Length: 439
Ligand code: AMO
Image 1: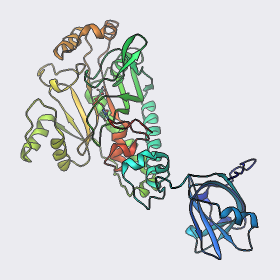
Image 2: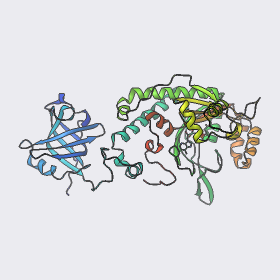
Image 3: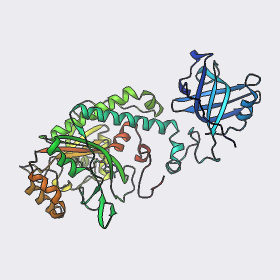
Image 4: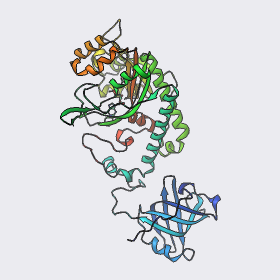
């Protein structure tokens, strides 16, 4: 089919914003054909753009013949431009329609399409992810990523206002930070290197120069487990702060979460509505339970976790039944945590660490760090790691390393909580998991 050019046409109105008060005015709208209806005497189509949709109606005798001819070629998701006049029309959605004087077909689609972007024909998550761009035209999927945008903006604003500066750490690294098993090796010229699992070592080093830093960036973990809350590439929001301990950065974290939820409630009413989701602003301080208390709650519910183990998924689920909102689990056994977390001086089997939870899902973890080289070396050896591979990092601890603390927050996990989705793939544009490398 011969296509039209956009040429000098520029949008003068968004489809979702065209309203009956504009009756009689001429507008240019661009977008996608959502629906085409030919009821004999009357033909119309629904044009959708990023703002919503509007009906374009072709009453016979009132629109030029070329427009009629072009209408007959329209199929779903064609890209079109319309120049026309706004008319009040009770029977049309939102009480308004556009009567076109000119219709430009800017691109066509290949049918059958793998997915119905109106969402009227439900599709499973794999079909949706395979045709992600069509899926992102669905109101629900679209709403999630508009919320994600507001979440990111409000995180940046909050942390900047608190005096943190945004940094970027390398994603190609020489040694593990969170344990060796989940590393992705890559060929780095004639050497082996790895994709970063977290900015941990670099963010700690950077506070010895900047004191307060944050990073929002992609990190990579070769976790084999195929679950609804793990992906192999995820965005982590990390902070690190000098002259602070776990308690200080927990306050920053809960205030951040409260701020983000407030902003989303204020700025994303329509999106939350589309998702049929309500997310109450959490009251501070959030509840803090110790690891021991968590095990006690579980024991009462008939779930046994032996002391010193990470809480397994069924345990987390049981905990989530008791604690449906945001809360912290603090004081974890030292053995369950990475080498850089500081054990308590008076009870070294426990460490100054925490997880931020939402129901049964872990959103963030963090803690006070070890800031003395010898102690850090000792912990590396205890965890079966080789201090020699960390020399570049350990050296920095000889340059004047202040006491410090920080956390890492999984952006997608936070989005799951805010948007009420139970599969992480819903809130990641192009998720990477064990089986998915495209699109
Ligand atoms: P941790 O390993 O707990 O801590 O990771 C921090 C947070 O990152 C998110 N996350 C993931 N999200 C999706 N898929 C994954 N595979 C995945 N792995 C982690 C989670 C998790 O809570 N360096 C420490 C943080 C710190 O102490 O500052 C760390 O990486 O939401």
